[in-house]
Image (cartoon, rainbow, N blue to C red; front, side, top):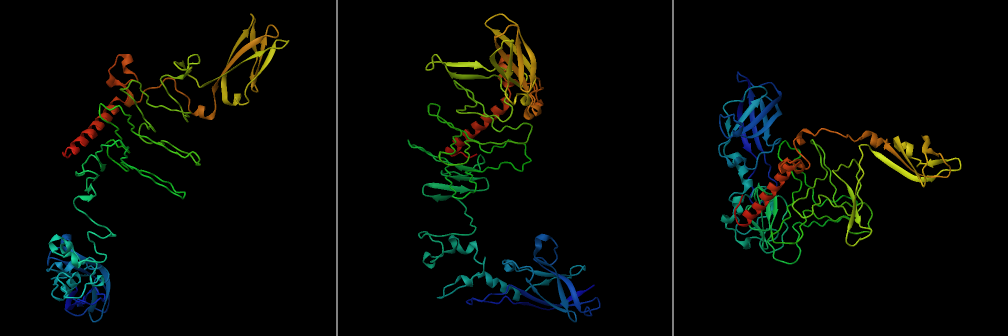
Length: 506
């Protein structure tokens, strides 16, 4: 087994008080490697590792203060030299501990014993931290102070530094200042009459009170004004082509939890006696009508899970309830499902006082209807021309014929072929009202046939769209529990806001 005879340990950090010269942060260490008989090891390169411990015996990682890892070091007649800190920098606060021990390991051998206790010279490293430097008349320049040398204890309230000693770019309470780099503030920051507090729970801005677990970001302010106010106003403008996002919320991704996540949860409420309108979301897109591109008042996408709802809306507890109200054309790129349907227009006879409503015509098939009137010729025949796309779009044709003006027989003499069919009547020159239906066979329809009878998904079994029509309680309604949960969350948010405004923290 090899062992080391220590020749010298020399600190070359240097003691610099007023010089601006760069101080090498190294400790020069020399020793001699010998074999078990005390003879120098053969000349050559050896892997040697140096570790500085704060204990002479412990191998616990908590007692390891510095480790340079294995380094290749050459020996001559067993003698070697190495600068501690040349490969792995020595920590600035290393020599704040007065009990330090150097451990040496050569190759696969165990660490040599005993460890070498570092004494006087290496502690000149502490000069870089300028613990107690005093100057009579010469100003201390930035170049004289090592990075990280000034600690909290040097500049806190107890340090008793007179304001007259600070000038230039140093922080003060009156001049305009530029502060860069990472800073940590503890306590309440007050700007004007608004306070800002932040901790590991969240951020609270605008009113006195600590952040609470109910919201990561809370903006609060009490108003008594007839003017409008915005809780959050984000005016963004881009003269280039990049995308602008007023608010981007990524909630629960990735997530392994089972709780409900809300990208945005908005509760628009006011006093019970108020008659003003409430908007959970009020969105305007494309206020300038002369700009190009597409505007979306609301655009939503949902994916994943058992069922995905791009937009899910419900309305209740009002004189008239609209889960959705569209003033303008509405396009559905998919299948529209409904419990009933109708058109609603101003009544053609009394448009100022009444509406006229008609129910939709329903069918278990994806059916198209075509109709018209035609007059047969002198031979009692007439050819009905259908749209050029008729046979490409439809299949399973059905015919209805009605003679107008007198009793007579009418038949389909030739069925649809090349987008036309022939009607024949027993008498010539008769008017015939005809109707043809076809079932869609286009690519989308073929891939998305409506199933007339379907089983309810497991999570919807036992529920009803309209439970009261079947003598069932309201709790049996589809999505009843989800709506109850939403109402509970809304109440909790309201209660939390009341507690916080009264000084009671969650």
